[in-house]
Amino acid sequence: MAPLNEQQLDQLHIQRIDQIKKAALKVFAHRGIIGTKMSMIAAEAGISQGLSYRYFKSKEELFITLIQDALEEAKASMEQVNHLPGTPLEKMRRLTKSMLDGSNKYFFMLIQQAAGSDEVPEKAKQLLEQFSKENPIQLLIPLFIDGQEMGQFCEGDPYKLLFCYFSIITGLMLQEVQADDNYWIHEVDLLMKVIMK
Amino acid sequence: MAPLNEQQLDQLHIQRIDQIKKAALKVFAHRGIIGTKMSMIAAEAGISQGLSYRYFKSKEELFITLIQDALEEAKASMEQVNHLPGTPLEKMRRLTKSMLDGSNKYFFMLIQQAAGSDEVPEKAKQLLEQFSKENPIQLLIPLFIDGQEMGQFCEGDPYKLLFCYFSIITGLMLQEVQADDNYWIHEVDLLMKVIMK
DNA sequence: GTCTATATTGTGATAGAC
DNA sequence: GTCTATCACAATATAGAC
Image (cartoon, rainbow over the protein chains, first blue to last red):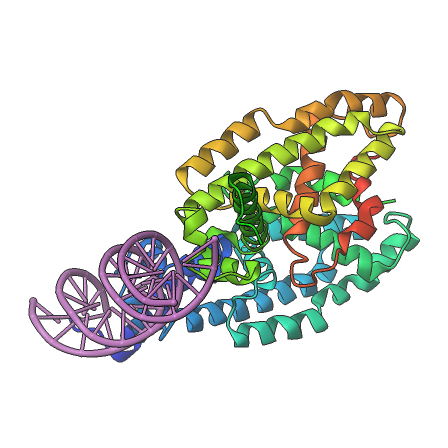
């Protein structure tokens, strides 16, 4: 076999990084930065402990990278909601389900974990604070007001209600950790009563 | 001053134990067993690091003791609810508030923390499993059925609805950790919509 | 009974063999 | 590029001074 050219090596490098990030996301989301040992991430990624440090210079750096990814992902989810089909209620249900689904779930869990902990790196704290200031929940306010006018959502301050609703969703994510299959996704309608008329 | 007699020494011993337990409960509830260093507990209790080990032979033992206390406390709360005055709805609101209130809060948070983590000692796991099997939520089922018949609570499987409701409550406790004052206690009525008609 | 000093263990991070 | 072996340091737990 011919030796790999530069581009192929780059490709491999990126794949490895993704592999480690994916593994780390899952473990960090469940156990937090302190509860996560580098050995766990390496095991989850199927590589040796030391190799992780060829791709990320520290546990902190890896963690911060993932926080950045997660915040971007969260924002993107909120932005996309307006382009979904259906009534405000249907849009909200879709958004909820996509949050509870697949790997998106881990991003939201990570944010939740990190926000509720004071042992995160300073840089991560700053990012999270910035995020909560310009909280992308605000992007949903027009949609929510539409829903209120249509009589689908209950009366009250839209931001507060949305904030409460999503706190419940993300709060529940962190609990059903042991039972790894998705319990709450079947109970979306129960949860939505909080914001419904 | 006369030297202390045996009983007084015992008394002092118990006070110290309570002091350490109280401090440890608060820290464990917020940070979990791994995230909690013995130095934090000692600092919170206002004693030296080493002294903790005169009263508890390990961090694990201290943790397990607190889990036991918490599970008993949780059960007691659920048992007392039937003796409270008022309609089922009022009883449920009182119970919710007492869960979110004062030191009771930390017991429920601790259970939540521990249940969602797999880094707890084996003994604690067993206790928690036992607890979830004979979950004291079951004690509330007759009350809930009363409420359903009075038209206060929504239709549906009582156990499932109660389980969902309390998952939300305890899930939210763990979040508003930074803002140490009690936010959700003001939003009880919003949360109760989940179980209401 | 309590503290400070220290032994021991576990974890983050690096270096060197392959 | 990857692994194993190792260093350095932090945390648990113990021992000894007061």
